[in-house]
Image (cartoon, rainbow, N blue to C red; front, side, top):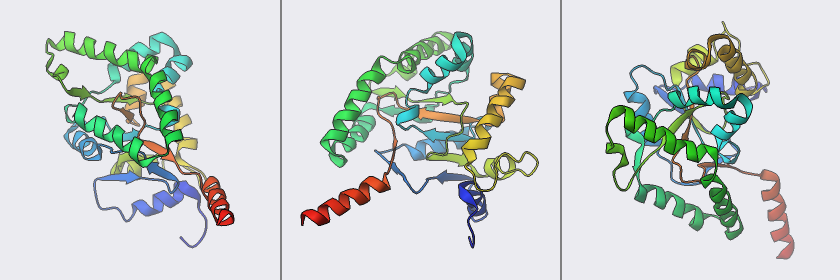
Length: 253
């Protein structure tokens, strides 16, 4: 673009060149931390004929335990309603070997100090409400369906948890949802010079307050993916630290 418009409008401009029904948005300072089931996410969205799932965000450190965040803000009654909206797609039932190989990449590709930090976080995750609630949701769904086929040995159902925050962090979205809804001139939810999440997230919350969680969230259709391993999918690249480290290496040589 010939002049600065900010992240939101730069994204809107780039979407004019997208010809696929789905788009993966990755900010310049974000990275995949480990193997990520992008293909399975797209298959889930393709097979979602009702198009409930419009956006799937990939977890990062700050939202890894999103249900805990939701519980602290909105309480137990709202959480019960949230549970009913959690999606457990068959396309995202991953085998343990896939998930373990994904975690092994973390150990191989990153420093020991970072790995130790991530292991510590995964231990905290195991006792989180977010993780404990997954078992409750699985039990509830299994009892209501009378089937335990998703509990097969070696199979781990990933969850898509509704979120009341639209994270600009790495995500997969329906292209038409971005063009016809997020960037609609009718709603004006994104402003020049700003980020999408800054204006869209408050609009999402206002809509939920007006229409209720189920109907209000449905208009935005944003979910967070979790394989319940306790490890997140995406990380943040710190350019300042990188340059400082580079300068230190130059000085030492």
